[in-house]
Image (cartoon, rainbow, N blue to C red; front, top):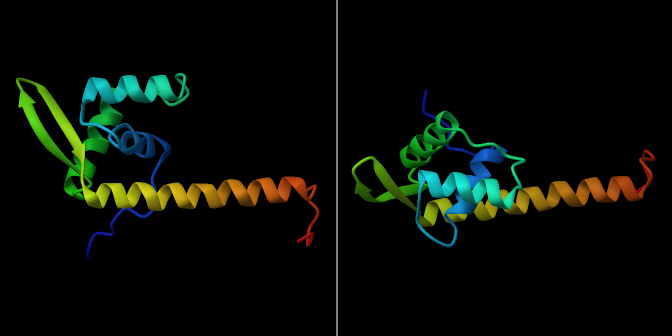
Length: 111
């Protein structure tokens, strides 16, 4: 059976792609970016980070751009940028649905 490409990202995956949206970063810089932007709400430990990075490389969403000893730097590919935009649109729709339902007071059929 052929492997399914990523369709929906976990929160950690989303933030890893976001961290690479504007610039290349190494693992430590990705962790710092995610910690800063989420005020620590999304913890990104080494096991999670390197599992995500390996998956993203396998899916050609990111590419390694430099290796200095153990330090590896990553950049977003066009494919990764497209998946990020797709996920951002999906999340915006989720938020709009939630806000609409909340504004309706949770009444069934109030559309």
